[in-house]
Image (cartoon, rainbow over all chains, first blue to last red):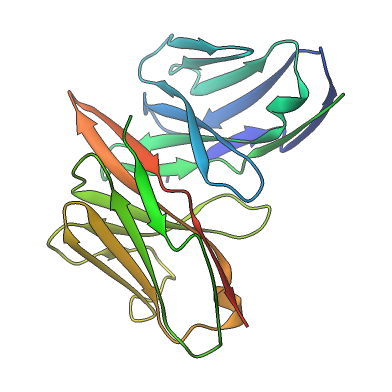
Length: 111
Length: 117
């Protein structure tokens, strides 16, 4: 059974700091997704990582995928308050194209 | 990018009544749509996979007679919560799968907040 674990589950940080959210998964999938969810809203796609070594960056966020380690990271650089949200990683399970979700990381960035 | 809409965005209903939620892919055809439920401060829970022209596949623990799914066209799937009870109050989100060149991605609707009184 595919499992996806995120850590930390909760992160409070100051503006201007750097931090990393980790996403570990238990099978050999090479398709991993990062989403952002604001309170009361649906999910916004951030990154789609489709191969080992994939690295994508958008603004202050950078995501990477290491399929050998079964690990993806979401790195936040010089955090700003607007990045406060809950971030989910999800892994695509080959057999039926379903996404298996991490528990989410609630990120609070204090001014 | 692909756009998925949901209607209504918010609904309040009385216990015992039924509520229908629509999920539409606006600028693409989706042979597969997914229905999720999300309780406060929790991750998404997949309820069922909806395939156009065939019966939906429900996840373990999800009552198919209570949560009726109809995927009658390539752009529309509906979820009907029958005989709703307060414990059915939740945030329901649909997504549509797009596949191209061996790559698959899900696009999410804006969600429907259901409150059962």
